[in-house]
Image (cartoon, rainbow, N blue to C red; front, side, top):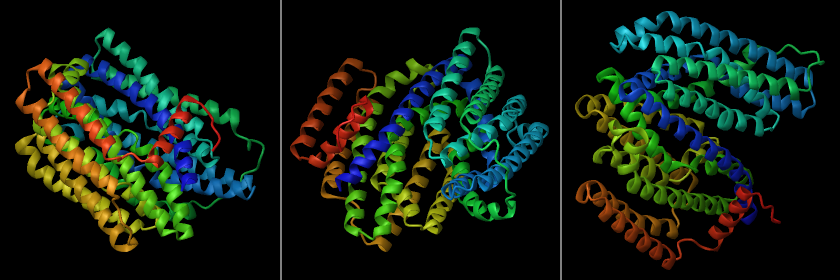
Length: 502
């Protein structure tokens, strides 16, 4: 199995490194913007951005996936004219749909702002952000082109370095010039066009088919492939914005801004999940093709334990630092409250890591029907519970609805995998992580947010003692075994650039 662990360390470290840069840049941007705009202005911008993000699902109709698949397919056959034909067909269609979406949203913005959310101040934000659609379509097309060519460096630079880096520069300017959410929306749109120009530069510099004649490719054929994928992906996109939209519907924009900062800060708990899951997907798919159930079980259990290792430690960090650092970094308006932070940690940590990489496993097995159903269950439950809890409990209700829908989604996926694949999901070591980690998590929460809420020095001493005690227990129980140390060593070497022999 070490060859698979090595592959996960090698590929996961690349994704991890770029995501680490991205999260640092995005955190710095959030610090400047939340302080510059205040909770009300930041909430207005976030609500407008969520509307734009939700409506994006109607552009492209999933053709970006078709672009990657068919270009890679034709390039594998050394058929450059057909690959170029796919590019021409998809790029023209996507540019037209994104442009039409821009026009539609621009002119319907007053209706959305006034009659749906009863917030006329949203109109200019929605209009300005809608202008970024053409630029975003260009960047998406170039991103797909390079991914089809198995070049992940350019997409990583565009998504995780240049784009957040540009936003950070604009955010610093907005902060020092004391501008508002309208100017920030203009900055976002301008940054989108600058990233599109950089993407075009890379495309023109690297592309190798300029002199090739394009073969005509049927749009119908491409849509037959992309539409089912588009339908499955549309629900998670809406789900990601649902609570923000509900909060914006029932409450003032300030509540939206505060909730977004809570979610943004708590999302740090799952940092690294994407890197592991992204490389787990092809590795597990390879094991599926070989029918090696023992290796599949071993890999699933191992990655699930790594999920626990990451999320428990980062949950402790969020609990210990959130109470003090959130208002320091983002402003007093965003001070964490006990029920909300607990719900977000449970959904982002316990429910997200407990079941392991269940989503990627369903995709690896080709069980897209169950993948789609789990998204549907999550969407419906979040909508129902959000509509019930948000009007009464506000931000805490939104976090509670997220927690419930996250649990339904992941436990449904876990149920399908266990019943159909017939493998043991949790190893003894992973269960030990839960037995040891959960009590410490609850004790830390109680100490920091209930018992010693205002006693900073006392909390620091207690937190340090608890973490030392927790670390000793983990070491004594040998929860981290030789295979874990091997993958950590490999991962560390890749991160710092040391290339040891595999």
